[in-house]
Length: 334
Image 1 (cartoon, rainbow, N blue to C red):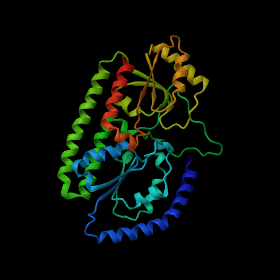
Image 2 (image 1 turned 90 degrees about the vertical axis):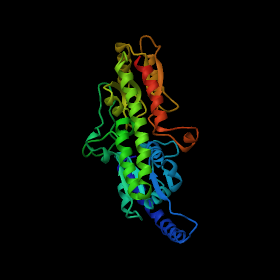
Image 3 (image 1 turned 60 degrees about the horizontal axis):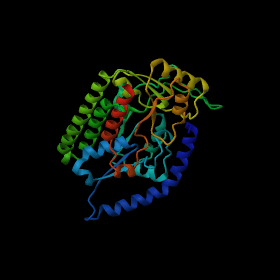
Image 4 (image 1 turned 90 degrees about the horizontal axis):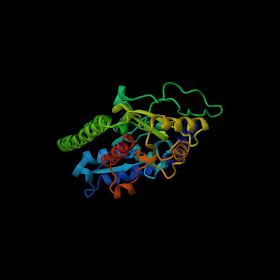
């Protein structure tokens, strides 16, 4: 959705929200006087990795928080449209965590209308500062088609998929722990201990990635799909080819893109063509059918953009998904 449409949607939602917000504030005031309703931290996250990091840092204190995952319907970050209820939850939250890229263009206006003016806000891209990367169009990758009448982009477009770097995850967890400790100083030591334990797990998995890539016979991966794994690839010195950039809205690859990627599979003698999660992998299958041997494996890596509460009930977790991604990567590199 372009910026103008998102702006129009936001203004409509804010109109709808005004009455609901007043009602909600009235209810909040009533419950505040109730001795049987202890105050819980209200935490709103946009995507699953943020939600899971908060859960791990809260640990046993999760019962003291009202934690919300906004993108809980299988729609990924780039397609998400906030509802009036979503904006209301953000407006009343104590801590709001979001990615901060172009897909979150609606957030700035939402924060201006916040009821809780003491809300703490964590923007992942701002937190990482100089560690974020601009989107990169590599050789053979299909560029974005400009919509008719669309103005040129102002400034660089940054790759939003910062959570797919374990190194980034460590820094972001520290920022989350600091915010939680400020909001709930009584349990600050518990949050710090939980973060330290979780970061050790992140570091151990990071070391496994380093070892796997160092011992692999191949150092190039090829995606017949969008490529949200730029941060991961750069962390471990992997070269990559792909049909589209990670934030692309394109779904149909051109003849030229298919041809280039098929020839690259042949040239490098790659045994696997990678995709991201999703029911259809038509582009990857088409690339495979245009190679000389037509015997490559089609493997899927999880970008953690569409994980839902239903998946969590089945055991989904950030570390679990990143561990499974490592096993897929090993197959692709050997």
